[in-house]
Structures are given as structure tokens and as C-alpha cells.
Length: 371
Ligand SMILES: *Cc1c(COP(=O)(O)O)cnc(C)c1O
Image (cartoon, rainbow, N blue to C red; front, side, top):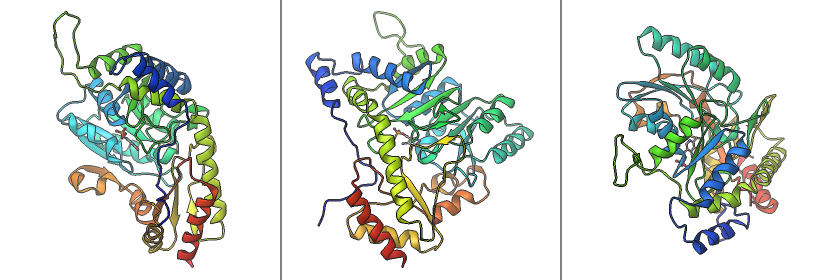
């Protein structure tokens, strides 16, 4: 059987090994070192944010943002429902309660009108939400200016989960920079990777300092180990940061490749009853994963199984959080949009190293299944 085609495998640029070798040569094989500092500087410059803190995962970054906002037991945090569980699990780590908001049709992200409705309703019930977590799913920017205006109007801090949206922007402003905090993920399946890792970005020095402090076990200045706060072991290793430096250098090429892959899928299926997520005016999407919606209800599963038979990985869209067993009792404001997307959509192999020949093979399988 031919080699498996994965959904979104790592794609090294070449220089990663140089930075990793440097880490070994200088013995900075630890969660401190020059690669971490440089990676943070380079990422902050690229994102146009005041600074960045390199962490062990995107989930850890969201967790630290919630900790710094003082989210604790009994609090409510608003979160986009159509997302990966890493967006909202940290709410539970803090003993707080998620309130899920459904998506709107055009971007598949948080519906601003529904967000406002939910805030008004929570306030009426005497529950002031402590934070809002908006997601740029599949790299598509959410309606960030509308969401930000609502967050500002009700004075609720905004966290932008841009785990999938490094390299995307909205109205020329990079995804990740729209809230008080932005987060990125460098997990192995993301547009660039550190093998596993994440980052928190912010324009506020005090928050960046605090995040570094909390991510390194909250150690007070003293010769012995002194702690007046609960900390976490969330720092990125200097070896992984070396991989990240090599990857950041090729990010714009990776975005161009993923966008070309999207265009090829769209052209290849132009005459078929499928829909692709379009870029609204002002949005620039990194096209982390090409996703499509089938008109025929049976098609997503049929196509997935047909691809699997050819050793090609594809995957249903994210299952909305308000439909997950673990969140069965959570409050949610839903319209059915994300549920419909989940039932009718599919993610196609979108790795930036995917060849046109492989893509033609995938397109052939899809077309043969849709006949
Ligand atoms: C990957 C991802 C995360 C979590 O990132 P990790 O680095 O895997 O912890 C959070 N939110 C979204 C939308 C993601 O895709």
C-alpha cells in the first residue's frame, strides 16, 4: 500500500536542526536559553504584539490567561462552542463554568449577535462573565471587530484563541492580537510546530512577566525555593524553541502553500455539490485545513471511508462543545449552525508538503464517491 497521507503532518524548513544543534552544543537543553528568548522576540515581531511567552502548549496559554484574569470557582467564562476541547478545558481547570456560544454561517466562528444576547441574559441572571474566548477556527478570522466591540462595551476581557490561525489576519491586523491575550499552538498538526508547544501574546508587559513567573512554578526571589502563589510547569524547552525558530522563518511560505492547496481543492470540485468556506472581505485565512460541506447528508462519511481505503486521512469537523458528553450540563446559546456544520462537513489533507499528484489522487477519490 502507498504511504499514508496524513491530515496535517509536520513540515520542516531545514534550519530547525541548526538551532537544535546549537542548543546541544551550548548545553542549553532545558526550559531556559537563547532559543526561547529569540523565539519569543521573533514571534512577537511577526504577530505585531508587545511580547510573547513561549509555553508547553496552547492549552497552557489559555489556562494562564484565565489564571491572570482571576477566573476561579463559580465564575462563568464564555467560549465559542465550535472548537477543539483545548479552548475550554482550562475553564474547568479553574473550577469555573463554560457558557457556550454557537457560530454564524459566514466564518463558522462565534456569532456576535448571539454573544451579546448571552451576555445580556447572564447579566440579568446576576452572572457577570469573567472572560470571552473567541476562536479563529481552521485559520478563518472570527468577526473580530464586532466581538471586540461587544467585549469592550460590557467590559469583559477577550482572549483570542488563534491556535489554528497563525499567519491569518483581519482588517490587516494579525489574528491573536485582537484581545487582551492571544494564544497560539505549535502542536505537531498546526501550521508550524515546535513538536509540541504554544505561546501567549499580549501588549501588556505586566501580564507577560506574570505569565513567565506562573509558567516557571511561581518562584519568589530568594536563594531557596519560596512560593507565595500556585505556579505551573508550563515553559517551552530551549530545544523545542529551536525547532520553532526554524519554523517561524518559513511561516509565510507555509501559508502560501496551504492556500494553494485550498485553491486546488476548490477548483477540482467546482462542478460538484460541495461548498467551501469563503474569505469574507477584510479576512485573510491561512487555510490551515481545507474544509468542505457536502449537500448530500451521506457524503461526508462515504468520502471519509473511501479515502481511508486508499490510506488517506480525513476527519469530520470539530464536534461542538455543547454536544460533547463531558459538557452535557453546560449552559449554551445555540442556533444549530455548528451542529449542522459538524454533520455535513469534512477536513481534507492539507499539509504544506502535500504534492499536487497526491492532491489529484484525493480529488479523484472524492469525485468517484460523489457520482
Ligand atoms: C490545537 C488547539 C488548541 C490547543 O493547543 P495545544 O497546543 O494542542 O494545547 C486550542 N484551541 C484550538 C482551536 C486548537 O486547534
